[in-house]
Length: 175
Image 1 (tube, rainbow, N blue to C red):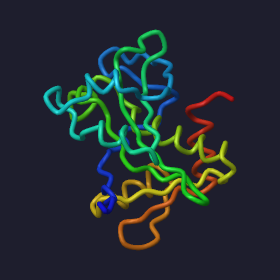
Image 2: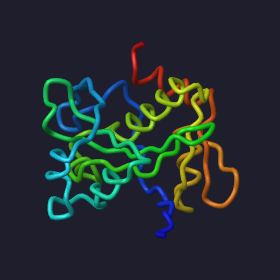
Image 3: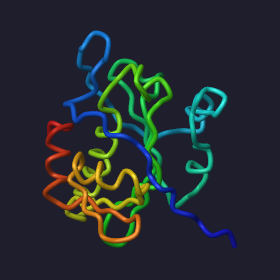
């Protein structure tokens, strides 16, 4: 039996926005989160600059994978998130921005924050009080504490508590 390994998250929260911001024009674009499909996976391959094999996440029946797109432009994936529902929280297995949204010359800001906020929203919907857990790379623990209000509770494990989750959901989603 193959043992699943926790991927240490290495996404950078560039800024917390109300949606996503075009770095060239400064325009704000409303986003939509929807299920990631086998058809979608054809554009998220390493050859196109993606860092992870999203088919692995998609094929794991315990995981749910979501894509972030701009409203009225649903064919261009801005970022992806894989989650698992645990007993008392949502666990973020993997978060990745599209290759064109990474680095100094990224096209849009706010993608990782938007995806994390969605995980928090799902946590509230499931009755987990917004709690979201994940495994962080050592060098990013402080970054996640400062940008997401996450709490580091040993090793590489982090949790986003209710208060921080509510802030993120309120920032990105108009209920």
